[in-house]
Length: 244
Ligand SMILES: C[S@@+](CC[C@H](N)C(=O)[O-])C[C@H]1O[C@@H](n2cnc3c(N)ncnc32)[C@H](O)[C@@H]1O
Figure (cartoon, rainbow, N blue to C red):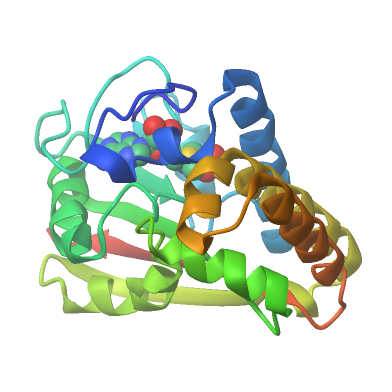
């Protein structure tokens, strides 16, 4: 759902992912491809739920929330689908678009459109790296003022387990540091971060209270710090099934 390259906030006032993460449509499209490549590399596959057989059937209906450019819908309100429509509902990297207190109701909305016995899968990353250097800390802390709640990934399992409409909850956590291709992941992560930080420059420079030049210097230092082999992000994915 949503138009991933739209410049204007369509969803929830100032915290929309599209609004915050890029002013340049092409740059954002490139960044999302890079982020996809990063996630594919860390997990070595595209989905966690055992839905391979479903995806091979012609009549299977899949909803990939936040990744469709044709249908306009706001997961914070009501998705434009009937109850029990999809066999598999997948949602990834919406931590900027969904305020923390809205996650349980968003999950209920995703379950509403999911068929009984269907699979719900969520994937979010902790983009507050472990073992950050001082420049990265400054920038990452400032992002929290924009409502970027990195820690939501650690709550996904609880959200699914606490939901009475779901069963068979599974959770997997990956630290980029431990991946076989950790060095490549670090480079991709660093590039992704650098693009985000460049896009957010006007907002973050004013939050940190630095001039444009000082901000550029900080961003350069951050990039160097992200090369530290001990600095890494964490990704979490969960899936569960809807009760009959
Ligand atoms: C960071 S992008 C992630 C896109 C995609 N899920 C991926 O992993 O490549 C966030 C997407 O979520 C969409 N989005 C943000 N808030 C939304 C909302 N409340 N309802 C539906 N989509 C939303 C944005 O338009 C954007 O396409």
